[in-house]
Image (cartoon, rainbow, N blue to C red; front, top):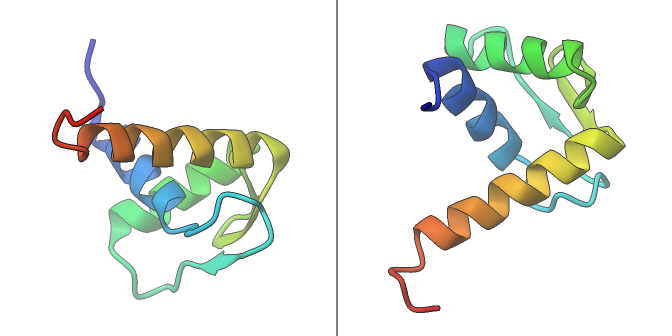
Length: 81
């Protein structure tokens, strides 16, 4: 099992939320890459984002963003933990 390009794009959108607290929103502009626009739409359809073009994280989105940030930190720690 491996991440699909769509999964990677969705993780990247979740990483746009600098703090996964749900207090900060993002706006995906119409000029963004097609993969980013598609990822935001898919995350919205899945109940992770409040708007099709970003908006705020839902409770499910907060949880997913926290996990995305944790995974990123673990993968980029250089094995120092």
